[in-house]
Length: 121
Image (tube, rainbow, N blue to C red):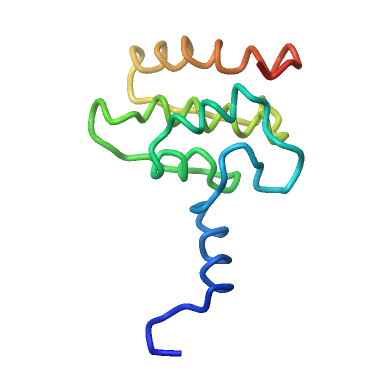
């Protein structure tokens, strides 16, 4: 193998560790498919947004300019975490101002409602 190249198996492991290469609709832990509402939300994201939304559970710092989809990505991440078994009480979503916090609150309600009623639709 040439210097600087990565074997296919190693590349797959690196993608899994980084959260890249995650397939929408398939939780990272291999559990059953995501609820349709969450899978559809992830499918609407750009690849870099989807990678951030489906990164391994834990802290994620998302820095991007205004209007780039940070709130959309954060809402998708919270929905994905809850759909894959995270306790909603353990999730902290932090914004920089009250207006952004209100926007996030307004978007999270509809995003999490299908998960609360158990239908996932």
